[in-house]
Amino acid sequence: MIYRVEESFGICQPDIFYEMRGGEFADWHLHGTFPTAPCDDPDPGFKFQNLQPDTAYTFEVRAYRLIGDEKYYSPVSSISGRTPPLES
Image (tube, one colour):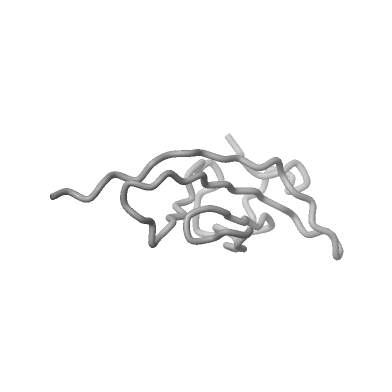
């Protein structure tokens, strides 16, 4: 299974960039690419940091390709959850 866009011709190449929002990022944060992740890896391993215990968060990610000077974005994917409380 290949998770690259059709314009990549099914070849795994770092032509897709990722932006994250949520946790410590109130606005979209450019993460870059995941060049070392296999093409069929649906979890390239980004981790949010500095999260507060027992707090609800919504995390979002979107991908884009840069063609010329224009960005072409994917739909936004999101997940919501709550961090566990501190153990006493």
